[in-house]
Image 1 (tube, rainbow, N blue to C red):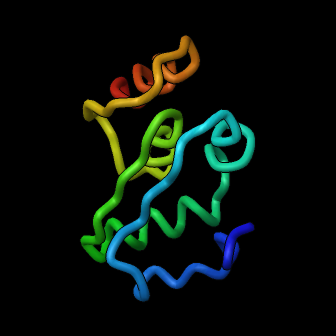
Image 2 (image 1 turned 90 degrees about the vertical axis):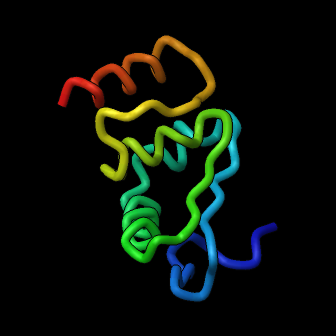
Length: 88
């Protein structure tokens, strides 16, 4: 069980944000606007951002990565998302 929810995270209280991987990312995190706000805030505050597996898509969907190379678990869908972000 988590100690707090994404909504309760105060970015200024942390040195970094690490997004764990796994199949739940697509369902719960890829389009989570609250998480995206936290990612943007952390990026603006020069915090360390890390993600693994399917989670790096959250960085693309939050808008902090555009026309960049990232490492993500390779699926047809993740490749399509990356390619689309590189064409913006």
